[in-house]
Length: 182
Image (cartoon, rainbow, N blue to C red; front, side, top):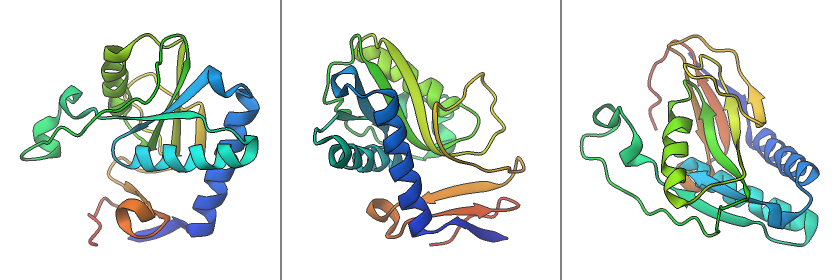
């Protein structure tokens, strides 16, 4: 069963709230940078960057991180994995890095992102921002900034749709794990 758990207005409100939380925690924009985990995390980070600029009048540093070749399940993800570009857009040394992603599930994506990020320097602190935390973590991880917590069963699937990638903004909970057809 497919259930829309957040519509376009809900997604907008989540992003607005997350941007305010970042500004409240880190009023000095030079203290941190937003890094989006490819692919949807980049779109989320870009939207947060725009919102933070509207709030503060200044643009926080933002970059993109590709974790493709840091995954241990590469053959399960794609038949022919393609490396995308990584452009951090900022020196992360001594800064707070806010890693943006769509869904926190097992924590394996975060582990890959931390390994990839280490190739670019040593952050003062790394925090995770996700649109949805669905539980079932297999690693000791949590998100510092969370759009929504959603109780799921192990075989459920959460899809975060973003206009830039999917043509619409919403969050869909596929109960029972059936694949979404677009």
